[in-house]
Image (cartoon, rainbow, N blue to C red; front, side, top):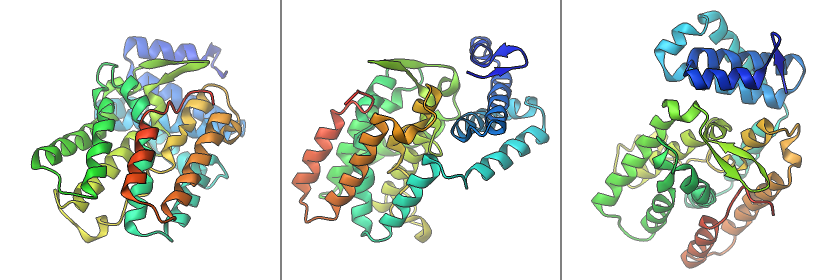
Length: 296
């Protein structure tokens, strides 16, 4: 636990959330990130600095209150520096990117869809929190996107997919995302909605995948440079922010993270084999029922 300026960091965060002092919350996370970076605790530096960035980027009024360009520029510079650190946050996306280069466009799309399927159960629970209802729609979206690889999708379903896509983007700018909403986790600390902020933002990668898929289907503009299959979603299921926030110094050693890493690469081997759509559907159904936070 960090102690900043004579007060407990978590108490400072909780007080800002209680008062809805979003500028104060952004500054608290920034201070925590700077302290972590000074102590060479780079995973927590990534966690806290990205949280600060998300909050002040969501609202112009908050941006103006956090302390001006100096704080924002320093936070951005630190985040940029951390992108080169040998951390799970950076290494897994790089490994996924390299592996995806060898795959067909369709195989990459299926790899990403399998990842989203593993977030369905978590999304259903988070979707019961006020303002987070869109997360409860992931299961429906996965089913429709899987169907779309094999047969046409109705205009009505495409319209709903577009609504979900837009709502996911808007989620990160809404107060409910960083206001402290949480769900219980059996055998562990509560999971916060804000824990979806890691890996460049799980909610943003979900948005990017759906946006890309809608372009793939021709529902929205098909700019040539935006048609390649979206890869960023694949590593997001590791949820490192949750494990780093709740005490792990090395998230890659957490059993649940290791189990998810195994699933990511098992999926890679799966899509590299001679699979059928029936097998993909079976895997999707199994993943939709998976509690990704459960102790294995």
